[in-house]
Image (cartoon, rainbow over all chains, first blue to last red; front, side):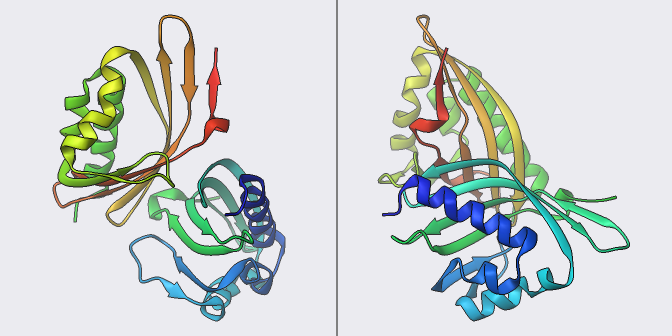
Length: 123
Length: 123
């Protein structure tokens, strides 16, 4: 099982990649057969190719990310974070709580994002 | 599916019951066949009787609870909260992130608590 420190490190890399990286950078943190459910309640995506495509919107905008809190338990983590997206025309702020599981190499094996329209603000 | 407001209401009642209620008050918020995994990575408990027993430690101590943040998505919620327990000899503070699912009546059908020893402080 990945250590708590390794899990925290992957989450940190994840937020860095969502902030300043490409969709490929983000997808590289996922295991090959990982699943992604964002937001929770939607049909999960399966596999790194589908996951990279999901993050492709990142490649067109500037994001800033900030970890607000993280809890690690077993091979899993739950963490609250903020993503601020500057589209050039407006600033969109969203603060989800994500739950991830990790394999022995601390690659993400599943991601579930808890948020709704209520958690988005525009500035 | 339970509405987001109904889900938030159950979470609020849950924290009130963990704070000032009995183990029976807490268990009454769960569906009959609900599961409880606390902390995540341990063997889940199944059924309201086992769940009430889990919370029986509540009946001996004073707790104060505070909701820090909540995200609702589909039939699920993730929320960060603080529990301060006064044992008479010391104060124990723990700040988990819990994930719950809910049935159509907004009863809790599963609870998974993300925390570790790192998230406990003593005062």
